[in-house]
Image 1: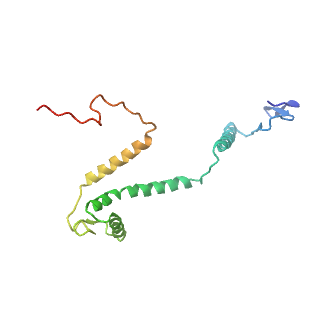
Image 2: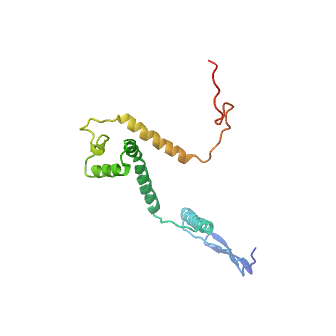
Image 3: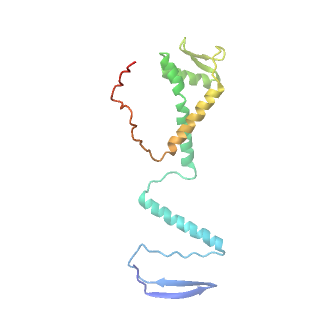
Length: 185
């Protein structure tokens, strides 16, 4: 609650103003007078003040800041691309480990081969090295790779969209901790 000493009505042009003066008990109260030549400019000014007040209010709850002017979004995009690219290493890692090879050495070797321009370099499982798989006649179907990538990306997007998990009650069948009964046949 605030108290005022004087309240005067004053007109400036076609607008009427109410000027309130006096000592306020509440020091967090402020009046902002906006003037503009058109209603649209006045609306823009009002929105700007409202945005500033809401920003100040939000900073009262959490004052952490991040770089602006799209710097944060570009950094997040760069990191997301790097992590997405890293996820593709699962395939050569699995192939190398299943062949009993050192997966990290194979992946490093594959990156080096591809960086030098050998875009068809893959793992020769018999010799444990990277070679041009086109000359060895080792091929995969395009449609297989395409749909694997498509469905993996769709699954990741679906997981990111989930905002709650609903647990279903177990069905009335056999419980996992009970062994299955013997058939009479």
